[in-house]
Length: 127
Image (tube, rainbow, N blue to C red):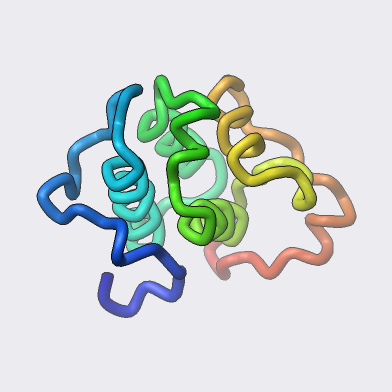
């Protein structure tokens, strides 16, 4: 992942599954590999805010709460961080990460930022 500043569970990544979307019955390794790939892609992409939210919806279409729970926790935290840093509100920062990421998949529109969280957030300069 080169110079990507986001922590991921390298020991749980299966490189043979890199770029292969995780199906509903994916293993922990497959789910973690897919999330790691999206973190990498989002970090390198020239996409922010609603455009990134749309990419997220496409990348995680069909994902269930249970599938998010299969992903290593630190890797999930990094996904949430890259989304927020690039202007995508993931819901209350104190909510369980898997629950927040799953509820985003179930919505068609990006969530509105909580004013206090918006003020305290360190956004990417392009966001």
